[in-house]
Length: 193
Image (tube, rainbow, N blue to C red; front, side):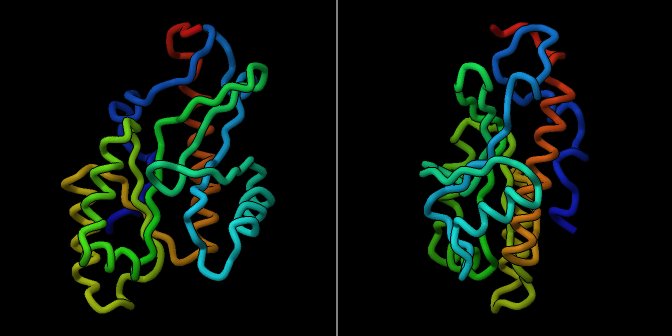
């Protein structure tokens, strides 16, 4: 069903459109940059504190995580240059919704507004993360239809998780896939220094 493949399984034509941070020819991505997961300071993880979520992701996946105020989305990734201490926003952004919140946002039209803001943010890889079991809420058919429409008609990558702990793992795995993508494709681009 929807959201079961990761973005790494997508076709190379779509992925080749992603912007690369500035670099010199034959420069290694991992030597030049560190990928940092940025979580929005307004995003909540139920009873878990943001600090606990950050600590869990850091310890499980050995990746840097920071909490900042994001104008749109709940998570994104930056490439931080190791020598220049300059940050570059990578072409990936996540809007995370638990099924109850998604149902509420469909009813009060926040859902359409949030997707429109994501589409206009300038980042190319839009990930809509649905957390929880859609079959447990009244109105589950509406949630399923919204997920299908978001993915098939609007071009988002809809991903599913079972809950908070699974979302932490998803963020870790997405970060690993992003690092792999940029590591493989970084030196293939033109010298942008």
